[in-house]
Image (cartoon, rainbow, N blue to C red; front, side, top):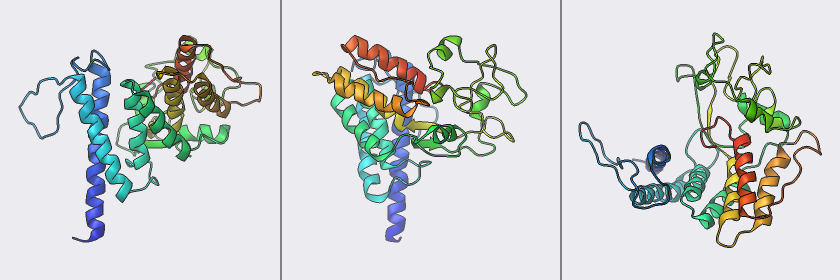
Length: 293
């Protein structure tokens, strides 16, 4: 076995345990009765091959410790044997982004700040409206930290919302559409809005994919935009809140979504309640239909 083969084996192992951590954390998000009560029931920890065995549910404390341990191990290994060049694979930055997400849920705000800042410093926001729209056409990997590459036969995520024959399963709501200013690139055709939408039929556009295979679009698991939202929320909710830093993070994100200089003016936060209301609204707009609003 060559040295390169040893490194590749280490890399694959680290990627796999990171994926295992992501899967366990997502199941916790869906099924746990609490994200922060260590004694609340979560889901079973599956770290071995099982066939007929029915594992008991682990607690939130046990599962969070398992997830954090897997992510830390994955990061330490990938930082030695991998790089951040392929966003279709688990990279060191992808692990840090997931750690930021986990830290926010578990209210470990200093960790959320550290991890999200590391990703922000490495991955720029879309430089302009065209680059942002190109994310959703899979013509650009701007902002993408980790995505699931989809090829023909994988299943077309866009068909969750609309089939290739034009049947509509889910529209987005008038309420959501009303939250966007007219000069916000996120509400434009090719992003939130599908081509051919009308005010009576707002069609989801983020996963429309190519005309030749409707709905075949890469699944963006983590974008750097989410890191700005995590950073803002963590700054507002930490023991000694920093509302200036919280507003600065969210305003950087909003500035990148402006089509005109007067659109999306900078926000200020008067207190925690005000900050959270505004951050959650921005999260709703930015992450609509991406699975972690």
